Image (tube, rainbow, N blue to C red; front, side, top):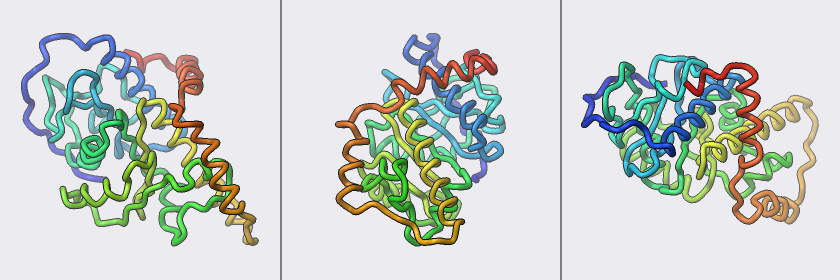
Length: 258
């Protein structure tokens, strides 16, 4: 959690969103709605950000103060790297909360989407000394591909941003000790599917540990082989899953598209 402020707006966009930006808005709003649907939200806190195509240094983020199931394409707010609102918006943004996202976007140009959540299972596993175990096929997606960042408090400074992005490196995901989960994606769909996989891995581990018996883990050789298979040569995850997830949302409520 972090406190919001409403930074001064900078030059307004005269033109309506491009077709590419509009599609990004729909997909980003869908991600927020899905997070709420699956119970991964935390009141009005945490964020999913996306880089605006064709506009370097500009991003879309949720209006601070709205629940995730209230986010739609038109109320997403465009901001710059400092969290300043681009154009006019009736909504404030959590510029302090965006600082973590800004650091990742700047360090990782491939990270079109940065998703940071406070889901319970992810926090619980982040607290464990040994972190995410290679205990399931879901967990093996992140074998050798998971960053770690130690908890440093609420305030997120530029110095911490440097440390966090160094720990993340080129990995697609990270567990923030005592704090939550983070995934990046070349698309919003990829970041979402990676987050779903990471959360599932954490849930499986916690349930297995609750049995109170020793766990059977694959050998390091099997772990490495399976992880390579799951990465599938660097394929973008979410290509098949995302249309199905949008159809799920459309059956429930299409207002995220507004």
